[in-house]
Amino acid sequence: NATLKSPVTNEPMGKRLFASTQIKSIIERSIEAGDIVGELAESWKAKRKEQQKIEALKNKAESGDAESMATLGLLYHNGKEGVVADKDLSRYWWQKASDVGNVTAMAWVGHFLSSKETSQESSVHSVALMSQAAQGGSAYACLRLGTWYATGKQFLPINTLHAIRLLRKGLDPGKCTLKDAADSHKKEAEELLEALEGGR
Image (cartoon, rainbow, N blue to C red):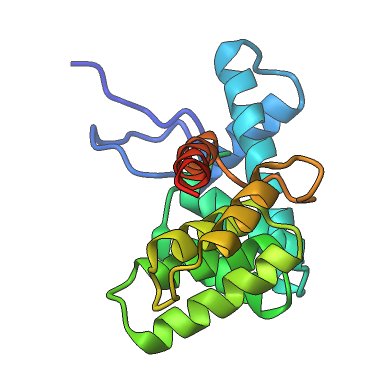
């Protein structure tokens, strides 16, 4: 059998493969210099661009930028743009963004609190955050609050008038500046609103 030799040192080498930072660095430099081309090179460039974008976003978030914190929370929640989904990191960044006044993050933290094992303390905090987010223009927060008033959840008293007002606001594109409600949320809200208005 022919002796295997290192492509870098030309010294004999074994058959086991190990991660090599040196080889990786050579390949990266070759791709960046245009010496390696093709589909794999383009895929590497796209992945590297995503990594640089996430690194820049993390740097801004760690420097206190609320929008970057909220965006990181969303990326970790959905597992997009090269980010591995991580619910704990998602909640961590949304909590940080909420603490410094990001409206969408307030709505999501309020959602997380409401989906936990319900206690009066967590419900009070959830409703407070959702109310601030609704006042700040979050469509999702308006729809969620409207649903809670319609059903009496989160220890809120059933109040059909409040529910209808909030559901209408959340569904009106001209009333909420943040279009952060998913289509599924809007569909549920439309059905609930129709039922509430039909029963008046």
